[in-house]
Image (cartoon, rainbow, N blue to C red; front, side):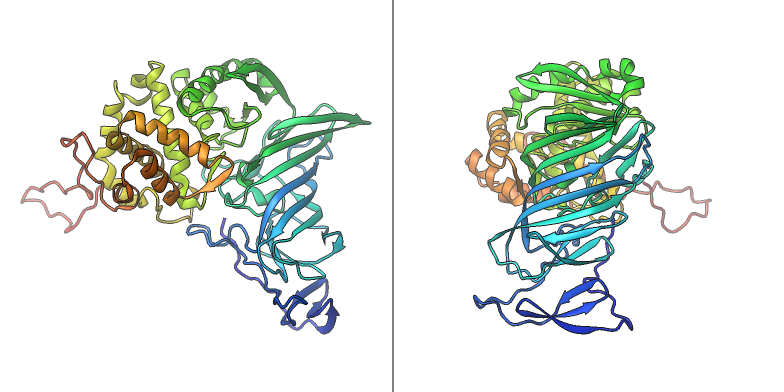
Length: 527
């Protein structure tokens, strides 16, 4: 989603007047208060607005500057048993100011906002595109905690569309969230960037007969009249794009523990007999992945399956999202894909990307373990058409220059106009190929040490490609800066260590010679 860059209200011909607000002079409009130039605070600091974006290379206006969110207390009310209904919510955000703030933004693309308070006092607000611009009565001091409450916001779910981002989605059985990369704020106000992770309390109110499920552990459930209130707590920091709130005619099936991890699955009630047996391989996948990279990073895990066609599966934290199109595929396809989403709980969820150009860290690692799981369970030939992992990566290597030209280097996707420009084959297969090259360079033992140290060192944090290069160099005992920079940022595919015979297909592909008797165009591009 591209968002408006406007930060100021459009004054037009609206009458204005100057009023006093604390120690600053402000411009008062109808329902809008915007701090203009004011004197310095008592401590000598001059408050300034927080940035309307974190400056992400691909999504420069996603997220917001000037504060660091610590916790979301989110309440959502679903008035009826209607998947298409408008949802009403309140959110209290606890944050720490990282500068003296005269005003700040939240990301919000929903229908409406009722009221806003900052530290318990009414605050002025206005909206500009997907920016909710909030002006507190008094400037917020740097390095101090504050709370902002947005009450009475409203959001309406949309139909899933396999060709575009989803966000807040309706299905035949209820609604779910598919927020990656920039759609979560269509449901609730947030600092919608993976760089600003926070803990969550999620409170769901829905009609009796429907079920509400969210990330983390259910801490309470009570019925009051014809309503049920369920409260979930995610105590591990979570990026906003990973939130899941599934409300509707679903059932929750508790499978017990796998590798010590409680497992619960959520599926439409009417499809439970068909879908639940197909998700059972997760009980094997969890201990398998723990054996590769270490302890599972969260409180629980599970699978959420919806009836529809999202066009993707998604690693929402502790509850991976699939649609029924995946569950129509044979187990030799579904199970490696499920292992891919499970791997994201370490790579992408626990360790989040610093910016969206770093998404190869998510998808490259998940694809690595996807192929590895297919191989070690004897299904690689059916899944990828090859007998060995070397053959799989040799095929990916051959297309390296083509994919770098079409989509950009692995750690530098060309653009973000459409979600698939970011989530492209050179991020998935190309990211896994970088890991294969790294393993060839440092050896299997050092490679596994790098993997384990990466998810241990940055658990609960956001990390960059530079962080990965530095950690890999330290753990391996080699200076890998030039090596990994070529693999991650180069426009040409580097030589593969240990495989001097591997070749890259020329790109663009050479044009076959035309018979002399034919009049051919002077240039022809083959894709």
